[in-house]
Image 1 (cartoon, rainbow, N blue to C red):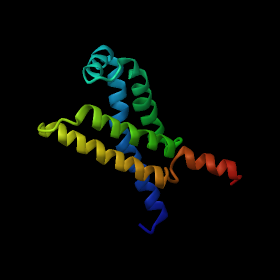
Image 2: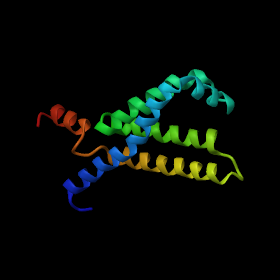
Image 3: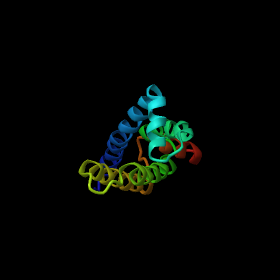
Length: 135
């Protein structure tokens, strides 16, 4: 894309699409706290990590949505998606889990691209950079 405004608008749409799933999922984990902890424990992940998962999914999702510390949060999400793929969806022979595994790898790739590209013009990151530079 050679049009910078269109490219920045596309980054905004990408941030919205990538963040919605995590915001909804993080919020849902609050309502299903005990069940989520049990599920995590069933695959060997300590349930005590659930508050960090909720913080990343809900807080990080909101940060991505608004373009706040986008590069760092996107890197955190990429690692999270790779870990989630390996811990929860690496079930050879289960076609649905393999699809979920590949979905997580794909989302991690999207977050890595977002970490490189940045949030774009329509973001808090851009506004903060403009204020810092005096423009």
